[in-house]
Image 1: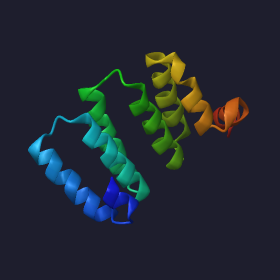
Image 2 (image 1 turned 30 degrees about the horizontal axis):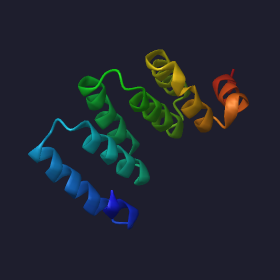
Image 3 (image 1 turned 90 degrees about the horizontal axis):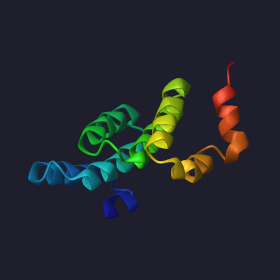
Length: 116
């Protein structure tokens, strides 16, 4: 993540690739890779890595919250809401994280109602 923080995201991705070849089952490495991919706007790749993560650690709500963020950035509202809902099913305490994303309850409701 340090390389990513120094605007060397592509170098960071190379390090993540190397780390994955050494130990492909580390969820934290994959999750950090998503952060770098998101910075680069490579949202489809983010979703692919997040899908892998849901198979490794299926009950981690933050993964689904991140998926919701990515879907929201892609303009895929239904998928974003589905991901947020899944996160709340897994851990109802994560409502605080969702409210921060949606700029509070009103923002989350407005997001859900957009286009209706």
